[in-house]
Image 1: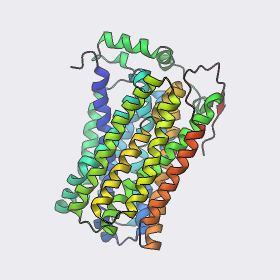
Image 2 (image 1 turned 180 degrees about the vertical axis):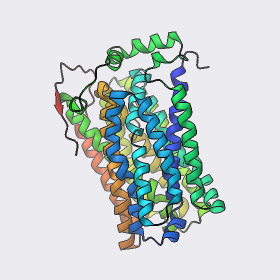
Image 3 (image 1 turned 90 degrees about the vertical axis):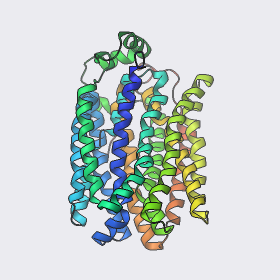
Image 4 (image 1 turned 135 degrees about the horizontal axis):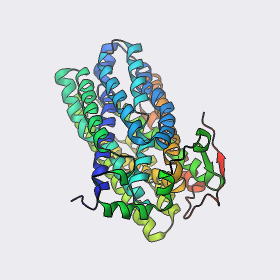
Length: 437
C-alpha cells in the first residue's frame, strides 16, 4: 500500500505522537474536580496550575525549533519525548500546590519540540504542494487525542483515581520514543524503507528546498531568527493568527471540562462523553481544512485566498460560536456550538503552518519555533485569566466573550496584513532580524 507513498506511512507515525502529547495535556483538565478537591484549590489557583505547563513549553519551543534546524528533528524529538514522558508520570507524584506546578513546568519543557519539529518534518518529507494537507492531517491528531481519550480518561479517574492515567501515558510515551528512534530519519532519502522512485520524485518536487535542507551548512542563531523583509508583514500577521488560535484552543483545552462540570453541572462520566464531540469536530476541521485550503490554492493560484482569507472566514464563525455557547440555555445547545466553534478553530489553523513553510522554507524549524511561542504564549495567559474571571464573577460568560474578542482581532489583522507570496527568492527578500523576547 505504501510502496510509492511511504511518506504517508510516516505521517501516521507523526500523528501518533501528537495524539499522545495532547492526551497527556488533557488529563489534568479532565481531572479538574478531583484534583481541585484533593489539594483544596480555588479557581484562580487552579488556573495557575493549568498555566504552569506553558511556562516550560514557551521558551523551549524556540530552543527546540533552532535545534531542529541545526541538529535534526530525530535527535530533538527523541530527547524531548523521553523528558515529557517521565514528567507526565511524575505528575502523579504531586502532593501539594507547589509540587504540582513544578511537575507541570518540566512536563511543558519536554513538549517544546512539538509544533516547530512538526513543521520541520513536513517541510523535509513532503512536496510543497502537499504542505497544507500534510500539516492539517498531522495536527488533526492534536484534537483526536482529547476526542477519543477523554471518555477513557474519565473512566480511569473514576475507577483508579486521577494519578493512574498520568502513569499510563508516561509509559506509552516511552514506548513511542523507542520506535521513533528506530524508524525515523531526518531526510526521507536516508530512509531505507522508502522506495527509490518516491525519493527521486520528492527531491524533484522540493527542488532547491531539498538542497537547502541537505547542504550541511550550520547557520547562526541570528541567521535562523531572521525573516526576509518582503514577507515580514505576512509572517507577523501569521504569528498573531497563531496567538488567536492558541488563546481559543488552550482556553477550551484547559477549562472546558471545568466549564461543563462547574457551570453546566455534568458529572465526570457525562462530561467525558460531552467533551468528545467538540474535539471530533476539531479533528475533522483540521484534516479537511488543510486539504480544502490546498484545493482552493490549486484552483485560484492565490495563497492569499487559500491561506489568509480561509483563516479569516473560519475566525468569523469561531467568534460567533463562542458567544452563542454562552447564550445557549441547554447543555445540548452549548455542546453543538462548542462543536461548531472547535471545527472552525481547527479549520482556521490548518493553513497557518503552511504559510511558514511556503514563505520561509529554509527556516521552517526556527520560524516554526517562533510560531509555537505565538501559539503557546496564550496558554500561559488563558488559564490564569479564566480562573480569575470565574472566581470574581462565579461564571464563565466573560471568559467566552474575551476569547471571541481576541479571535475578532485576528479577523482584522490577518485579513489586512497577511499576503503569502506566490513566488519567493532570497534575492527578492533581504533578511531582517526578528526580536524574540
